[in-house]
Image (cartoon, rainbow, N blue to C red):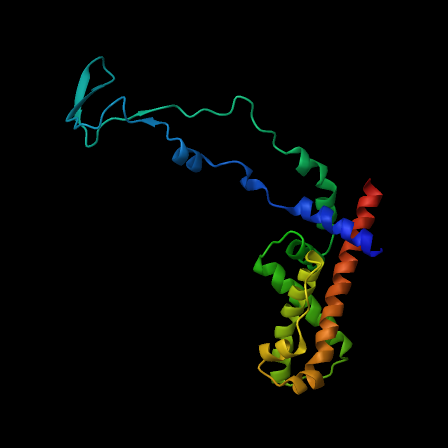
Amino acid sequence: MNAQQLEYVRIQLRAALVDDSGGTKGQLEAFAEHPPADKNRNPRQQVHVVELENGRGGIRRVKAENSALYVLETRSRRCPMPPLRDKAFSSCAWRRAVLKLDVSQQAWIRYCYGFDLNFRYQREICRFIWINYMKQQGGHKLQKRVEKRLIQLVWLAVQEIAARNTNETYRDYAATTLAGFLSIHRDTWYETYAEPWSEFKRLCTLLDYNCLSCIQEYCLLTS
């Protein structure tokens, strides 16, 4: 897939995964703006006794703590809303394609293009990148201090690649800035952390490419 095809899939995914559930007002919000209670019909004056039917043809009197309010009956829409909007229906194929991916790929797509900040997705992405990075190390043991800092860089690399895919004007972190994040000297960054940082970003880019390729292939097969 070339860059133009990748960007096309990204645009379709953003449209398919957008959360537009808040397009209509809830009942409480609608009541707050247009309350169905008419305060003028029954002025707020103390009503000590209210007469009610007792169910046997008689009348029973009870003391009222508050004055009565006339409230309009809430009714449903004359024409009920369709269960699925046209825009959401037209993008069903893209959502089905996302569901065909494995757990790590789904987490990446939902975080990057669905803008879902669920911590479970963030953890799954970092786990996937870290496992693949450690496989490339061939069992090479890392110092605890270095490993802790590298784990921090994994999530930072995920955020950087995600931001780059959604913002063409995004500028990558400078080495000095990254060294400051880890509280280390710039020379230490170049000696120990620059290469893993580049590898983390490469793995994120590869994950993004594989996800978009699988989605595009599924949509072509089902179209």
